Length: 328
Image (cartoon, rainbow, N blue to C red; front, side, top):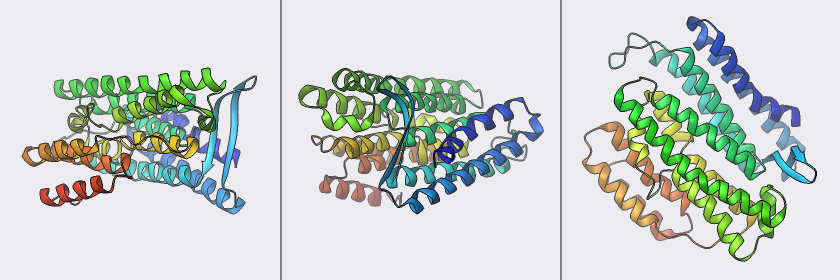
């Protein structure tokens, strides 16, 4: 199982290197090949986990003394999200070969090595973040996803695309400061970066760690007051907008917060989702650009994940979406 997990994690990064140095006419083929191989390894890993009939498997890969720096956790939650991000990554890679052509009326442009390389790196970073058993590992892959987002939003190299990419990079990086705070506090209090140690936290340290993770989640999932980057991120090629900024990267914040709850236990309720749903819903009603509207719809929809314990919030979110005529 350890070998399957490592192979699933490393294949996209190896593929990105191969794509980077391959002839441009072969970039799409190599991209699909490595995305498909990653998907096969992921499915084998999930099958092996369920056949083992265990609640969770934790693998410590890098440690200094007794301090766990990086490891992998394989359980029902991580395997579910891993399947989503890797399988969708394969579908988006395949779709991109038909979208990035000179026959595209809106954006006549052939796919380049850069596009497929960064897409593969993103798939690998998402897999690493989902499987990480330490805050340090989450932080590493959290930052890599932000860098990939910047590169892919600015792919068309227009002034607007470059401004949007820089905005996304800055805001999500500001959010990552919360993870730095959480990791430092966890280490100072427990002597390890392992997520499982969060259950040992008490008092102010507990609030600092969970607050830092929540702050990072707000930035990556485009929640108030850090939501401004997501609608502009739709300057990316449409397959990237669908994958990174609607289906996977913005779910990173939701996942790391859920992972914290799973490993650390109950936390104080966080209030503020109602305002986010109403604000994003209001903006989406008046925007003429369908991609910007989709961005604000994603902002509103993600609040459901962050505040699932607030039944009234779910009802408000549903009402706003139905009123706006959106099924998302």
